[in-house]
Image (tube, rainbow, N blue to C red; front, side, top):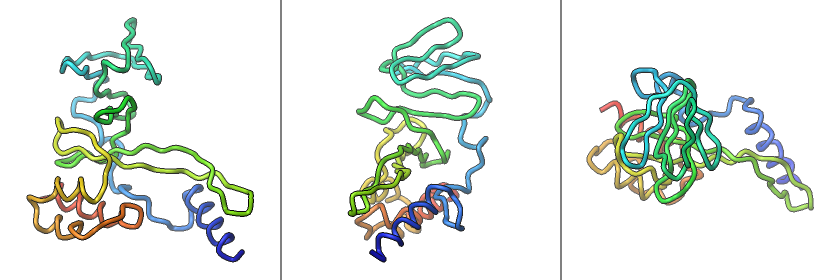
Length: 183
């Protein structure tokens, strides 16, 4: 019973963003995640870039000014507020939260966590994705994918070389990516 209350307290602290809990990758400024130039665009799978004033992104289509595009034809897009890319091999987009030699993306979803007593609480689940360079594949961030991406930087690689689990190691992964991007 005591464990259930501790878990409930932790989930509540995490979901409201208070309590001094570190938010991963929070060192990046909002304007630093976008591509330089400040204009809105859609990057098609063909490599063509369409500059536009207004982008409305829905799960299956994009509306640009007076044109509609199927989301399966879109590789990435930038609005006034964010840059998002499609996860390689999937049909969903993730928001970039770090731009650098290693780009980091996140996807948040709200789910129900069962506390084992028949009740549950809403919890925010965050998944992280990484991309090496601006043209690499956007893939799930795991210790294995990071080891492959960081192998040419000894200091960053040392941090992740023995990791097995992403859940407990996100702060270490964040540190390794920051070192890699700064060197």
